[in-house]
Length: 351
Ligand code: XIL
Image (cartoon, rainbow, N blue to C red; front, side, top):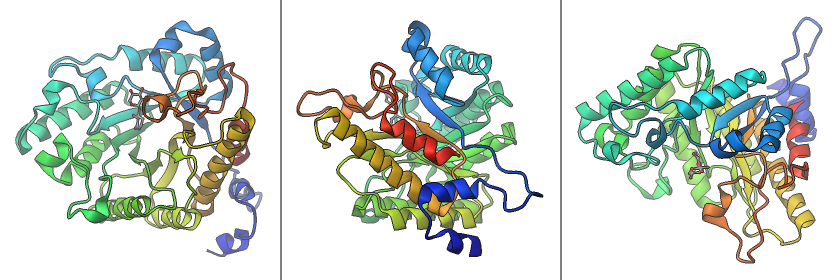
């Protein structure tokens, strides 16, 4: 507490930096916060410049797809591990670690899985899935987004705060705990994460979502569920403001419960930001700085990942293409793999 009070007046980047320094020579300094990026399978296979960008900047990789149900389990008895195996081999070859995304999500479900009904079938399929996938990568994928996006869009307005999914309908909120327990049983050493988005901005819906997520964490910890960290996706909304106080308070409440944080999918949705490249890149970097500094004011994140590394390969235009027709610029490298201000901001928080 004293340490936090003392550090409060310092810039947030320096807080992370100071948090990373040993207070005395008897305590070893923690390592730099690892940086990583989400990877698309197509360019990983076909684009050498893309592979070089990943190997020169990243310590962590995660598949944009490949481990989602629709990819890994197209039929009830068919598991297809080609993509994650390829990514893991690439990561290992270049001394990087891989995160797993994701074991239980409402989206990217194959048709057969959307037809799962009733508690017995749901429990059987979810357990079998997690056992099979986590066992294959036991000891090789050290961190999992076990449950992705469990909170409803506007939880404060609903009697029930969890998002609708096959799992929630059949099992209620206990599916979250079931998924965590199953993963922990299969790989007790893995970092188990619940991953969520839209919890960081000054906006009533974000505040309600953050509150519902905190309630979920409290309920899980009350039941001794093996939850180790919250993944803050960080798909930041250009044109909105980070709720710095709300976000730091959230992160420090998590820390008090023994739950860490990591940034799992950061990018900046630049649909509403100014058109000129340089101005837009500065606005993108400033938003990321506010986000990371608010997190660091609460606790040191265990990793920072962006959802892609180059503006050439990003999911943002699928939902948020610009009205002026200019390409989105949400990521740390531009389409020519040149560093942008966003990469400098990320680096400044890692030390
Ligand atoms: C996205 C991928 O990037 C796209 O390629 C795919 O079409 C849809 O999913 N939050 C998540 C990710 O947790 O899994 C999503 O990834 C982006 C939003």
